[in-house]
Image (cartoon, rainbow, N blue to C red; front, side, top):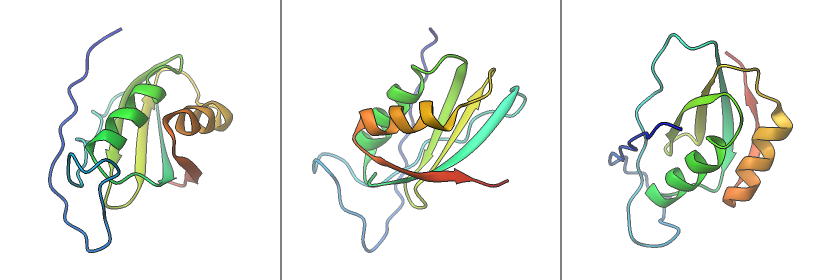
Length: 107
């Protein structure tokens, strides 16, 4: 397993609140291009760096996942993988992290 640094940047929004109060809204850097597959998902309920860390950790447990990027401002989670991603596996990982998968995004 490789280590991945999570970078949290400030992204102020009027309605964003922190789930634990220890960090503000943020986003991770987008995954590098050049992987076998990339899918984007809409996730509901993420509000802070802790949310990013939780979602990233759970998604990285899925076989083949190589990178995860979270954009808190939009609720978009982008996943790079060497294997096809089953929506059910992504939904289970998001649920385990404590958030709600709205669905897969086109594009």
